[in-house]
Image (cartoon, rainbow, N blue to C red):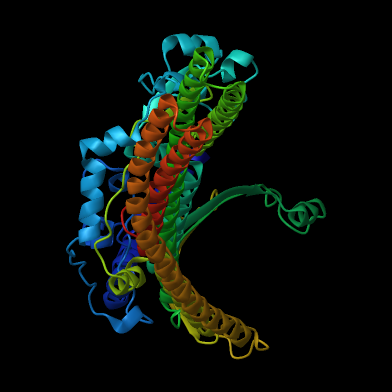
Length: 580
């Protein structure tokens, strides 16, 4: 019976007419203007990446799948006080650039860049990137709970040799490598999780815009020792010391009407932290793209060096055969044969070292891409110029100022310091809150019905003096604002230096590509003539060896010049925060 009465009284708390009346009155009294000003949710996507000329991506690329984009820089402390972001007009290609492209894409250039000796070059066998069933069986990972996208759980460590044995080789293009890095890089995943945490913090701050509502109740049975003593001593009539059962309940609504700017400052600070997290995701993604691009170019350089070393071995073997043939014919000397043998041994050592560097470059890229233990990769693209930079130095600097996420992060940090200062000073202002309660009380077996009541009021609090704590917090926030402004200046100077540095490297490497390409053709012709002279008896073996070394050096210089140009191109695009 008592339990049924408890449920009845609980329902009266929730649906009492008086309580409903005051709830409606409180809802009407809440200032809608303040709620409309402070309850704006942060837009997850503030501006599409496609609207940013420096970050234009094609459908299906890695950047399109990012959960965030770069917001528009705040007007305060903006660079050059530009009202809109300048467009990047394309520039005409210089004659030297056209000449390089024509030379790069011509059939003769392909023939010149590949010499004989590819017999020693390891063959690339394209296969699927996903692990095969046989490799899964050999690996010993049978628990599907610990698998994700073809890779074992990061919390597992291989315990068998076959689990770390290289079983697959996957040729990859640069775009494919970037796509894999976007999906599997742990640093990027960490940045995305930090962004989700910041968004949850924003929701927590925005919860202060709404009233809080709570109910509580209790059902107690008590018997007083004083009443029992009074009955036993005859002071009170018999039966007056019986146990009493009582039910109490209360419902309460609280709403902060005025907080002296504390609530709005907290929400704006949370929004700025979300903006910093969004920018951090984009910054880390750009850094990962640059790292993967650089590692890919390193692997290309190792592949080309291995190919050049293999060609050098073939050339040394041909020279040794010529020297031996001349010796057998009686027109050559043992000295020429020995020199050819020494030259062949040196070339073979260079080939062995080049193969080792290739293996190291492969494993570095595999580690960066976070691929499975049994997978190895190789480059699926030949060495060629990545592209031509179509902006002048001045345009590159201005675009870097507009699009670099680091500058916008410094601005957001400054805004956070300003909101923290307002939050600290709001503690010295008045705090006004609206409070409404509804109470129910029923004491059983007292021949009296349920009694209820309510209260509506406004509570105000004003902290007149706190020993200077609030002002000290405001001073700390003001110092943080100055620090953010100083960091902004340092970052701006660093960005300009990076653009100028990589722009200069780009121009010099472009000239080196032209020079090295011509040198390769000249070295090939010189080697051909040296062999003809040696076979005719008018040249020496020294001339042939020197010509072979010159060709090997020229081919290496050409590959180095192209890859250095590509690295400078990628670094310059990162410095301007453009698509790599």
